[in-house]
Length: 578
Image (cartoon, rainbow, N blue to C red; front, side, top):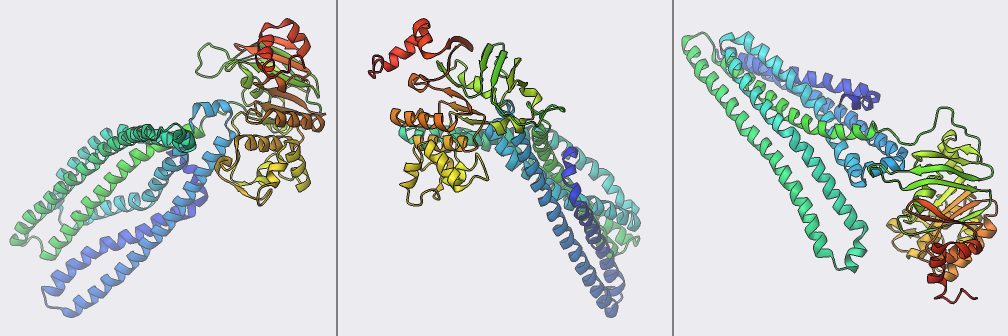
């Protein structure tokens, strides 16, 4: 938790003002029982109504000052804690944006959502309560204890019995509660995970009539969260009656022994009333501290989870001497490249890949599912780093080039087409924020998207639903292609991005790209061999290795795997002999 306090530093004035205002409120609270004692012993007992009125007005004034102090503390602590939470959430979000794919493989989406929302709220609430209760409770407790010792040291001995009992109770409850709070956050992660999967895949759920199954799955995760929450709540419920019992016994002891001292004449009635007030304040402040400690134990779990993200080593960063010289040609070379995903044991996704691609060449990549096609192209923009070997871009090792420089020169269209809320024009401009309307239209035309866009009532301006839900799969793929080509990259990667379009549209896209991207090196991952027939190079991957490399005619003569792919797909379409 201490590591997160740096996010409170910009608001130190409010963080200091809050305790100072609380000091004013506590001082006023401590003065009032003493003033009440004088009213009873000197005013009421002696019939001095003038004294009663004067002290009564003074008490009212003190109460108003205390009210202002409390208001100031609440306002200052709220400003400090909310800004602290906002800055912490921003820092977490920025850290996630820096993550490489390897980091995102480590932290699941649902747990990142929980950490950005619920965990930040837990820590923010702790800061708020710390600036209020954690200041008020110790000051009130210490001040009240001083006043008790000043009024009657004998009755103060009751505290010597009560406070150790309270401390023991709190210690036992917190030790039992901490692991429960850890489990609460983990179960919340699970609920978020189930909910996210269900909402993002709701159409699949309905299509396969799996709503009942998903309801049971959510109910299971939700019930597990409820069960752990109830266990944690039982501790809170148990603590209150235990502490109230100890408090009431203390007050009873004060009345018993204090009443006896009043009869003996060693203490006055007003002083006894003041003692009861101070005892109540001591025990109430101790209860506040106890609840705060429980809150701290829960917030510590959240703080640890937040720190886990903030302290995570970003897997891919710029080297200190990384060059910002722009990529000018787009030649790509793999030299003995191997790659292994984290947590996959010794199994390598890619094994000793050697490949040379000259600027402007088109490379087709074929292979069975899981053969390493996507992994291969993900290494080019450094979404991952190879575990062995190196990749050269324009003859320069990728690790010697700044990430921003690499990614400014590389465009990639991923298998899973992601569009963002906003207009079609805004989505295409994701590739080039300063693109003109003419450039947007040109990119859409090359991607064969312009015609269907113009058939929409508002053309390029309609707002897309979440993830482009109001478009078909093929339409989304074409917009993703337009977004990739609008910045005229030196390297263009198309990862099976025409799987949802028909053969005619695919052919038109390829022809348009060939004319538009003459100066770009292009990698095309395809399931249909027709998409790569005219490629300058075709590579076939199997088990992470290149098992075929050459042009179409060469592979068709000599490579059994390519022959099998070719004849199984194109012979049926009547293309083999035509």
